[in-house]
Image (cartoon, rainbow, N blue to C red; front, side, top):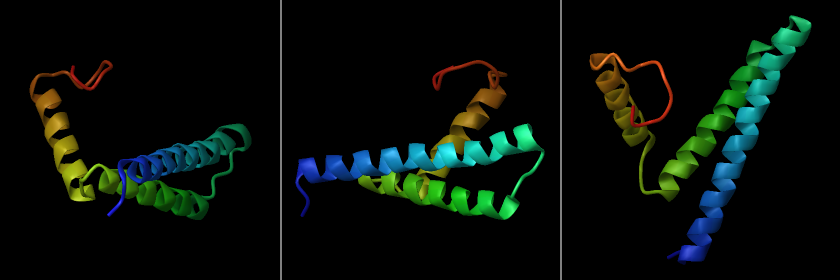
Length: 92
């Protein structure tokens, strides 16, 4: 069984990995804007890395990817029904 500190380190590692990999996806898009070139296969691989870290973060928090998707879809449907898709913040 992991201690709270070990779990925190794992969550920290997963969150930092997620930020790093999301930055790599953004870098691929930046090259598209800058150079007009886009390597879809490379982007696919980076998106896979993003997904792996999202799954790791979810696991550290006691959730599954299915939980994350279900809650997000419900949130977006609620916003759609209230015509609140635009704007900022999770609680709009």
